[in-house]
Amino acid sequence: MTEKKRLNKKALSRRSFIKRAAVGVAVSVAATYGVTAMMQKSNTDSTNVDMLTISDLELVSKIELRKEDSLIIVDMQNDFLPSGALPVNGGDEIISPINSLAEKFHNKGNTIVMTQDWHPPGHHSFASSHNKEPFEPFESEGIGPVLWPDHCVQGSKGAEFHPDIEAKFAHAIIRKGYHPDVDSYSTFIENDKKTYTGLSGLLNALGIKRIFLCGLALDYCVYYSAIDGKKLGFDVVIPIDLSKAIDSPPGHLSNALQKMMDEGIQFVKSDNIA
Image (cartoon, rainbow, N blue to C red; front, side):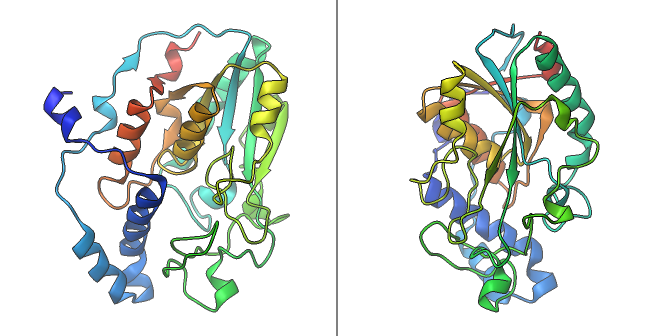
């Protein structure tokens, strides 16, 4: 990646990043829901910038696992996989390689944690709770900037882990988004920026110093978890082939990658973790 490309990139704040993401999600569903105003907003918000791609990342050639390392598998749930309520394209393609990496951590005696979106029925982030259509704009503390379809409802099939994910390797499952009035993208801190999920306390109690984040989605829950993990004092590594992104609007993934690079988060291919 050229120096000019680096200088042209600007890290976004959490709020501006989410707002740009909301525009892209709105565009992708506007035709379905007839939300013309959302498409008009997208046109006015679009910008032309150099795009950082996954192929531009500087990958670590090899990483040796240490006893203070932990693997965090993010939200590999039915609703985020094909045929789910909020599917991530290609999400099912990373199931088998995630299992392989989890087995590697397991065989070396390292800690493995899985996270799970776990919304109560009628969660405040659901469009149905406001008699609105999914993806309509909406903001309150801990919610927004858009409303979502009902997804990952506690006890539902959509909230379950995909049956092919080897949950048997997990030492703990951290559930998030279960407060009725607060959503949670990060696996560490919910969207009100003050409610902790308990993950950081668990990792600190176990003496974990470095975390490896994989799962769904790269530019949402994995991204926010990586940024918060770094702020909380953990070294953060992302096996880049074990996560899938939404990248809507165009540039959404690019902004996330740039921010993670700026924060010193490392990227590696899962085959190069030993």
